[in-house]
Image (cartoon, rainbow, N blue to C red; front, side):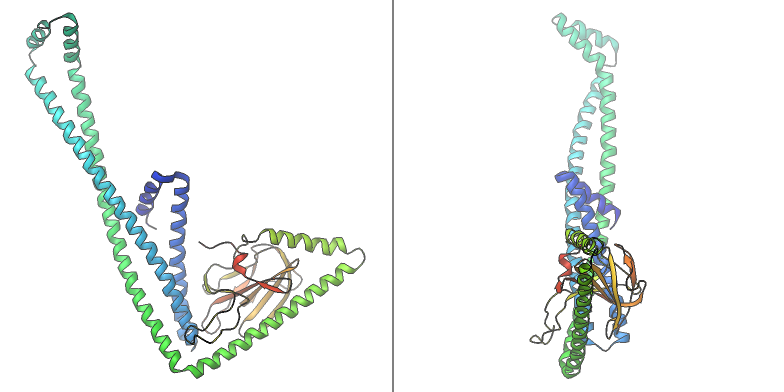
Length: 401
């Protein structure tokens, strides 16, 4: 965000709420930067998808997500323009007020100068004092004449300060108007981009309708891959829980195994809603059941996690302390890592490389590997389970801006 806009927004918000206002400015700036980064990620993925994949569904998902993000960014831009317009209005009113005050001061200063000029002869001053009706009046007239020069100097200084303030306000207003004009041009460019992206989405919808049989086959392949992954995860979790149960049943093992697992699970659960994201990117598909964006009655495979689009080569990090239970390779998902946190499990898929191995203790934020690009998509698939039940990861991870 531009420095001038940030300064103006801070100044306006400070009038209504100081500490909270400053936080709002920071949050809005972070949101705008995040949206711009998401658009950049999606643009790269759309290009990669066009080169490496013939999946119109994947392209449509990327384009529609980009359209959605673009709209959010444009809404933010419209808000910023309104803030600048309000600032321009407020500054113009302030300039008018200073101008009126300056005119008044200049008028009275002129009268002071005129009076001083008329009374420049000291004899006139003496006569003015001697013509007083009484001693008190003479004292007041003497004080007036004595302070006349000082008052003139003081008034001249105030006029000089007001003129300097006026010049600064006028210059600031020029800068604000220029900033608003730049933002309006960028907003218009964003609207033009949005129209092109919406047209691209319509082309992909038409393509999907034309070649429905081909894309139905791709969808069936995807469903088989999802089902295979789900079976594999459940099998790994069952084995991990069985191994923990067997270990805890041994004499003397309660303190070393069960106690540690219980403590770790408690810590994991205490951080619900505060866990770090494994990657920074754009959520392409959230947890749960979704329908095909074109074939409205067709259900897509149930998503036990979230799919996050990221930049190629992005690092994938552990969301909490734990132990790597298994590293596997699955069709459509490449390398995957299962991490156990007591009776909780996190699963990281679509990795090109893995930095850890089964049995290894890991810590929060530790790099598990790097993301892979599969069929033109650079996305991380992340799941979170409690015992044998998949959870919505977004309920456990930190809220996004």
